[in-house]
Length: 363
Image (cartoon, rainbow, N blue to C red; front, side, top):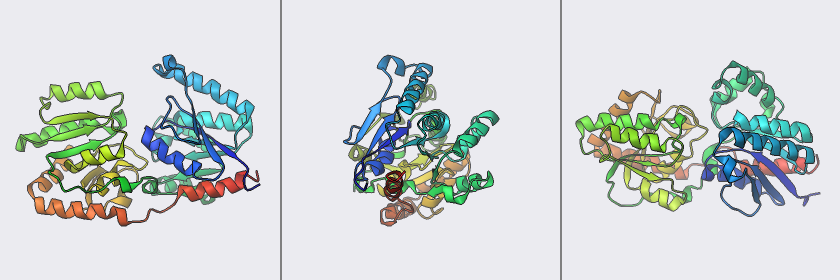
């Protein structure tokens, strides 16, 4: 029984490196593998198989969804897996719930975007998401406010599994390098609507009024890349802001992080985010919106700063200008931020999947 092979059917999206961090704990369990339904294949690893729509369908969101719906129905009827694991509600929990229903296999659900996954898409989808989430054997959460939200909705504590996303990040790849910090501000992010990169651009624009030579970097790619390049050009910031595109190699990300002084986050919701512990480990001061696990990572004014609203440009500018005008204080905070590598993350998804494997082998 102990060596019985297990296949975890995963329905997810996420950026390649982020998804990989959630899959590694699964394949770390002896005899376990992951079968992933995703729009595009991710990082190739032994034990991970991707099922993705044909290239011609990936470019159309509706056609891609319909293809994944048919695949999930087919997989559910075949029932050749041990459980279904949904990461993010829309539409992944919906597809995973259908597959679990058809296969009569256990459902697991990972909430990575706070209670936004329930309340962010209107009352009808809120009710549907809540109903489907109640079918999950376990719900994985990394945010205290989400736990409070779910308990308030009547979910029992015994169903909730708390973990910390910093436990999924290999901070050994990120460290401070003694080099010239010629970039004042940097953001590493998928260029999507909820990341609010245009607010970052507005912050740079405001700082330029007092510091004309301010330098910033945007690292990442996504559906808003073209719009953001035009937005930067329209504000006359092409000489101030550089676009680096997507970097998949952690060593390359660490290198570009080490060229900067301050990491800025303007997300309206996050599960982690992964980028903050990476930036802190690389020795950057972080100024971030109050989302996800930010309060678990940042001690206000000691190793970084939290801004209550992601779009409070004046608050961001005020904090950043004080830091740039006081290099000694900035250096002090950067050194404190780098101490994140010495902290042990709460919750371990490897342990969770190891225990889950024991249950599934008896299921």
